[in-house]
Image (tube, rainbow, N blue to C red):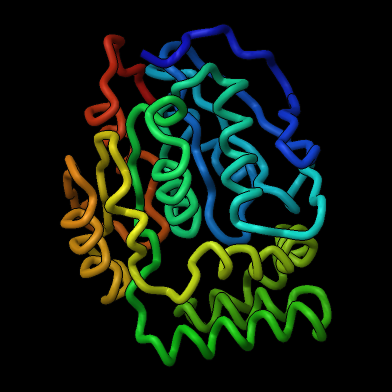
Length: 274
């Protein structure tokens, strides 16, 4: 079973293999569960889900490299991000449960295939965004990467969010929100997310995953996501599938948490929500 060490409170740092300092926090009690965020996310965005899970697990959230308080030693490579996750798992007490969201699910998938059960005990994936129309995906990737290189801070994020279907009024409201300043600072990491996704197709690495895996999608998500989830469940040995009623690509923590508790297992009781 994962370690059940009392986490150190506040921000801590794991040292990745290339010396990059990766910021993380641990909260709760019970087996270790590491959450891997998606594009344009940082560890603070995971705290609502932590609140739902902390009575069942010691939940670790971290800033992927280039985000928040984490470093960003160059050159970037997907393998470095896998090593980052491995370093956080070591701090949590390997092996740990891992839950990845969107591009973080794609990263978690590749990490589980490479690191194996010595690091990842069970794996849950929420909507890894594979399987989009190839031409559309390639154009999005090329344009986003171009804006990261040549555009002003925030332009790549604005294009990306529009390209993945955020309605114009919602996008406009986001650009006026207090959160937008933070998004502008990390939108260059979109190139990292696209590197993780590769050519956008479901990867053969899925066949190498040797731990129990749950592949999840929302009922009201983008049309290509469920097909990719089905394909992943076919490729990953010992995989399960689940669809969350009423959920979109940004799933509500209260909808996700019970599924994770059931899959990863928990001997405690669910604390009442405030």
